[in-house]
Amino acid sequence: MQTILLTGANGYLGSQLANAFVNANHRVAVLKRKNSNLSRIISLLPNLLVFNLEDGLDKPFRSLGKVHSIVHTATSYGRYGETPLAVFEANTVFPLRLLEAATNFGVDSFFNTDTILNEHINNYALSKHQFAEWGKSFANAGALKFINIRLEHFYGPGDDVNKFATHVIRSCLDNVSEIKLTAGEQSRDFVHVDDVVRAYACLLEIGPNLSSGYHNCGVGSGQAVRLKEFINKIHRLTNSRSILLFGALPYRKNEVLQSKADTSLLDENGWSCQLSLEQGLQQTIDIERQSRKP
Image 1 (spheres, rainbow, N blue to C red):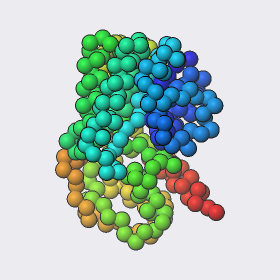
Image 2: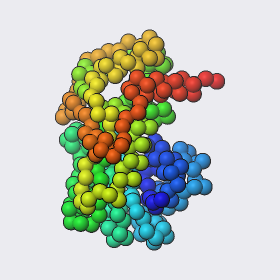
Image 3: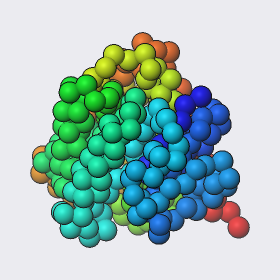
């Protein structure tokens, strides 16, 4: 059993991790803002130790005693009009302060959720890359183990509507007249959230056996699929009547044209992707469809 301090527990991935960590009998503490919406973890609250960021970063560590691992999933995508400074403070300054506190209180491992996006594509990607560099600096100085999780494009039932896969699934189920898309020649590594959660659990288990320093770990299916193929698969599985307008939107500047996770660290320690793309999408679509029934 470990004592884990989790950020972003009120988000989609964080809430799934909180549930998995509790079920694995870990001692789980969450760090949140006072005004955070806790609807995703309301049923878990009796099994969680909850701390507010506004009360100071030292409080969780002084209250909990030994914290073995920090799992950092909190993030700002900058999709709601946040200024560059606000995104920087959320994705670089806050976790850097947390990293300093972790070092001061003797935390063994810091698990950081990173992005595979090019750092120059938007403020979110830039700020995430900047924090990963800080993590590398701390780890190389011997402060703690820093496991940088390069998370590919994950999806699953109940994810936020502004996520790409969720948007496409719901648009297809709604049979919207047209869905405007890029040409879709980019290749992405799509992975179901259940496999992502098992990957984090695997990393948490092997964390004590990792050498000191900085570790990069890809989390994905290990297979690249063209975006056009992914969208067409959703269109077929939903029996949608929507017209897919490939090429109606331009690629973003500095768009990553191919991405595939290097899952070797996970593979070496017994993890494997359990859900195929077809299975994962079908499950997600079925649950989404069921949730719409009166």
